[in-house]
Length: 88
Image 1 (cartoon, rainbow, N blue to C red):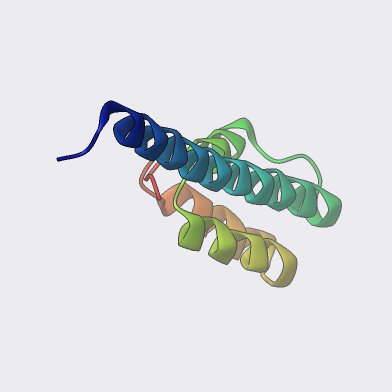
Image 2: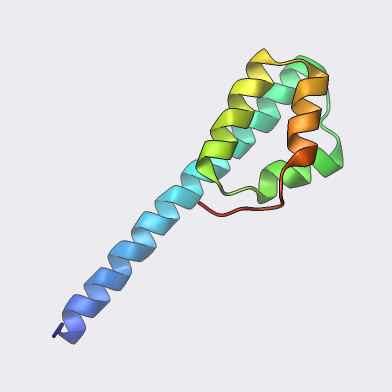
């Protein structure tokens, strides 16, 4: 059986891990938006909302690469087709 102190420490560590994952997701999302806008101009609000809501790291990484290598149409299609805000 865990002590109260062990439970608190476990809870803090879980929070720290989740916070780091959220920070990574936010950074990738911001990078995706910046790269899109550098290549194609202002990102449409609906696509920006989709990127900002997404928390699934593999999806965000895919979008970041696509924003750097794909056509505007490919990127727009991928972002438009995504289910909103999947979590990692």
